Length: 504
Image 1: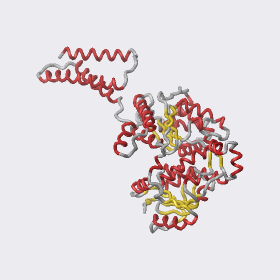
Image 2: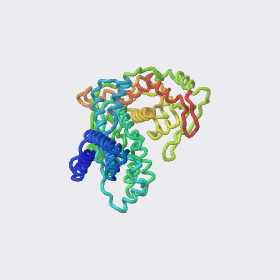
Image 3: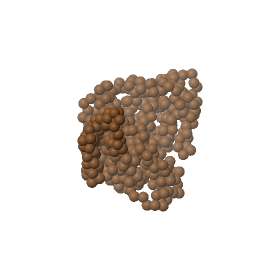
Image 4: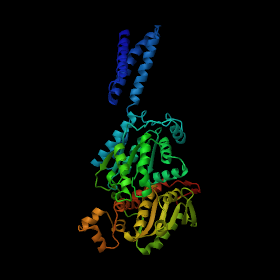
C-alpha cells in the first residue's frame, strides 16, 4: 500500500513539474483520461488506507492531502471537457425528425460552431465569460476608471464567427442552436441587428457630452455580454455605417466575441452605399476578429413547408375578407385607435387595435417616415398584424419597399402573425427589384439601358439581396407549420404593460 501511495505521489509531482516548466498544454481528451486514471488510482490507494484506518492505523496528513489533491485534479480536469455543444443538439434534432438529415453545408457550419463552443469552454476564464466571476464594476464605472488609468487592450483569445449565405439555409437556426447550448451563467446576448443598432443609438443619446460616447456604449455592452450573437447583419443606413468600425473596435478591445448571420459576404456589406470608403475599415476589422464561413446550400427550407395556408389574400377586392378575418380574431372586442410607445419618447399611432391584433393600411406603415424602432415597439404590444394593400414594388416606391423588408424582418424576429391583402404573390411583388448583376445579366449592354425599357425597374444591390429573404419569410409566415407554432405560443395570455391580451 505504501508503495502505491508513493508511486501516486511521484506521479503527482511529475505533473506539477510539467505545469511549472510551462510545457505545452495537453488537450482536453488527454486531461480527461489522465483525470480518470488518477482518480481510479487514488481511489484504490486511498481505499486501502481507509481500510487500514478502520483497523486502528494512523492516516497521515500527507495522505489526506493526497486524497484532496487527487479529487480536485480529477474534478478540474473533467470540468474542462465540454459535455455537449451545438453538434450534439443538432444530431439529437435530426434523430427526432425535427431537422432534415444530409445537408453537408449545415454539417460544415455546425462543425464551425462546435469548434467555437469548445474554444470558449477551453478559454472560459481568459474570456471572462462567467458573469458571477467578472468584475463587479458597471460599464460606466469601468469606463470612468479607464479614463484615469490607461487600460491595455483585452482582445479575446477566441475569434468570432461570421456566417453568410442564401435565404432559408438555416443560418439563424444554427446560430440559435449554438446560443442555446452556452451555459446560463455566461455573459451572452442574442439580438437582431436592427434592434442592436437601435439600442446603440439610444445609448449614444444618453451619453451626449461624453468625450467618446462610443467607448462608453461599448463598455456597457461588453459589461452585459462578451458573446454577442447578431442575426441578419445588414447595413443600409449611412448613420450605422459611419459608426460601426469605431464601435466594434471598442467592443473587440474589450473582449467581445461576435457571432453573426448575414445574407452578404463581408466584402459585400454596404455595397453601393453613401461614403462607403469610410465604411471599408470596418470590413477589415470584421475579417480580422471573425472567421468568415459561407453556407453554400441552395435549399430554402422555408419553402419546404405547407405554404399558402395562412392569411395572405391576393387582389384588391379582398379588403372585406381581411376585415372579416381580423374581426374573427379579436372576438367581441371593439377595435379602437391606440398608441404604442417606441424609443426615446416617440410614439406610433395604431389606427385599429384589439385583443393583441393591429390593423393598418399599407401606406400608414411603409409610406411614412417610420422604421425599425416603430416596428419593434408595435410587436411589443401586438402579436398579430393585418396590413391592407401591399403593392408591387419598383423604382417609384423603393423607399416603401425598404420599410416593408424591415417590417417583415422584425415581424419574423418576434414570431408574429401576418394577415394581408397584396397585389400579387410574394415573388411577384419584387420582380422589378434587381441587383446590378441581375440587370446586367438580363440586358448585357448596361443596366441603365434596361431601365429605359422599364421605367419602374429598380436596380438596387441591397434591396435586390434583401428581397429574397423577404419572399422566403413571407412564404414561411403563411405556412401551416409556422401558424401552428404561433397558436401553441399564444395559447396563454399575452402580457404587456397594457394588461393581458388573450388570443381569440
